[in-house]
Length: 198
Image (tube, rainbow, N blue to C red):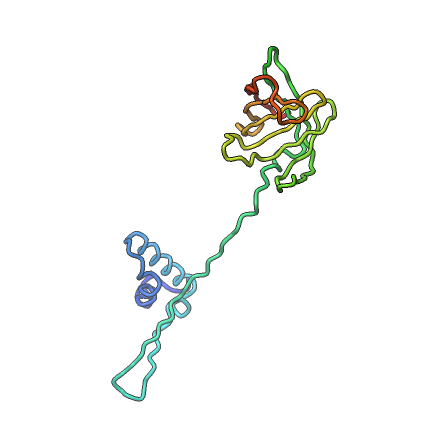
């Protein structure tokens, strides 16, 4: 350490008031004061709490004291934007649901992200038959799921709405539509499903 605590306490009284005086809560004021004193001990009294400078004016009865408080540098780290689909890139999933009997649909997801006409990202993939599928974030706030995997097969369109439930698992509901992926099959009642990553 460059300076002792006693030297810093003695020299930094005005710097403490200038730097921490605006804080009204005693605990936060003490934390600010202690931070300033630690920096003073590390960098020295001359750097952190320079002596006050008196500037004389033409009239000998008036003096101006200028104290330059130390303002510690702050750094802010802005996190990189998180791509919600990146966790699915290059993975293979089994989606299991029961509709009269138990079905296990396998999906292999790729690495290419495209965008719909409204700007929604879609990760490409294929089903067990090699047909194209796509997975993207759910953008409708009224839908209680975060992701949608759409599998438009030749005879039926399966829409898996789901949330991530673990590092290698998802669960949600599957809806069945005609090939237009808009007209519900039958009553349109969804069926629960779960998915596991291979």
